[in-house]
Length: 190
Ligand SMILES: NC(=O)c1ccc[n+]([C@@H]2O[C@H](COP(=O)([O-])OP(=O)(O)OC[C@H]3O[C@@H](n4cnc5c(N)ncnc54)[C@H](OP(=O)(O)O)[C@@H]3O)[C@@H](O)[C@H]2O)c1
Figure 1: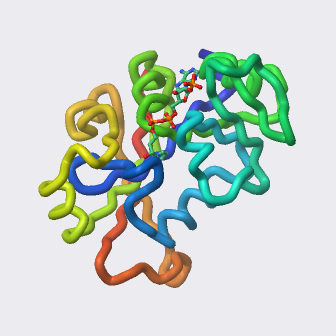
Figure 2: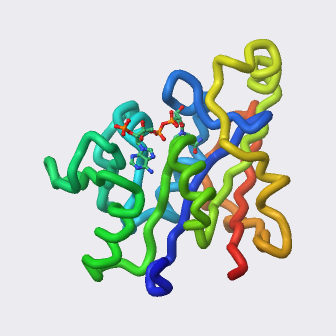
Figure 3: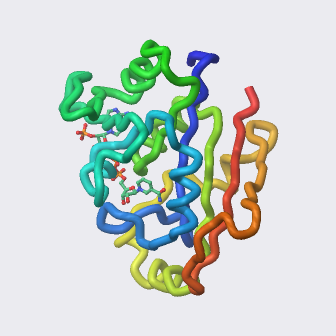
């Protein structure tokens, strides 16, 4: 793809690879919301249709929101760009010339497509540890939506480098006691 445009992705992954339940995230992490807003602002954010249609508040402020759906034909509706394919979403950002970076923000099918096509240069991964949620996943695994790959199998050397991201003390909002959140950045080695 275009070397002048960095293609990033952002995902939060919970116990056993889950990323969603009933089309929303199965946890509420203030720290991950803060992190997501920090890394993605002011860049274009691309969503699959299911994810976007189930977000509580849209569009996300201070970022161009792009929704991928084969039902649309590359058109603007109420300040949101609806792209017919992931490639046309990326091309739209590239040819606008306004940004040097964009974010693919899920869900599962769009992550799978982007990884299969080797489109992602940088993957921001939040690891969510939650013992109660882990038990729920073990009891009822089919009720959850999963990241399409095991990250410990695919985000490995020499294809990817790993870096943990730390915030200075006092920056992150307080998190609920029951979950622990860690931030990582994986960079594709080309
Ligand atoms: N934990 C996280 O960080 C995170 C982030 C985002 C989402 N999620 C979760 O992910 C789940 C949703 O994932 P999902 O796989 O069901 O849905 P999705 O990827 O959000 O949306 C799927 C739809 O997007 C469109 N689409 C996907 N790839 C496309 C492509 N390459 N070109 C054109 N259109 C494309 C298609 O729409 P059409 O059928 O209209 O063509 C497809 O049916 C939810 O549970 C959500 O909460 C989690």
